[in-house]
Length: 226
Image (cartoon, rainbow, N blue to C red; front, top):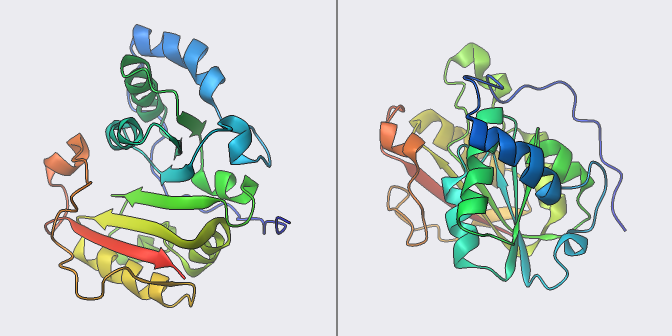
């Protein structure tokens, strides 16, 4: 049975929703393809979206969709759900889905916390949070996605043994995330001796990452749901 979600309030853990006009081809895909691959607007069972899926993954804030699409292409038997509030990012992602003929991607244009609240208990096998907005000024830290309440929500929807990868290029956010995720008894590091700056073998570098906008080399934190 799925636990009743707790209202998550007005936290804005992301910035602007739209930056520039969407290109005509991408707008056409938003109008036609996106409705076909959008997740339901309310509680749903992931396997209703892809009955033969062997696993279910969630990417929170997929940016332009390069990482999500590449991961989905590697594991066609896995249902990959992505959530992104930035319209231009969603437009880019649906283009990747169309160009790569991906049949295992479903998208939510909006706050990922809504998707988490709609998912049943222990329904996810893997979660990616790749380079979220750092809100690096101390007075803005409260807007960061990683908060104790959010970690608890993730724990509810992740299966025991499910993997959580968090990546950032802001040193303070890496420390912040480590402290808050490990403070939840449901999580531990996959490998306590891992080199956090080592690029994981299955990582997909994105255009955002290549801009090197942070204050350190990328940090990759891999946790497991106990």
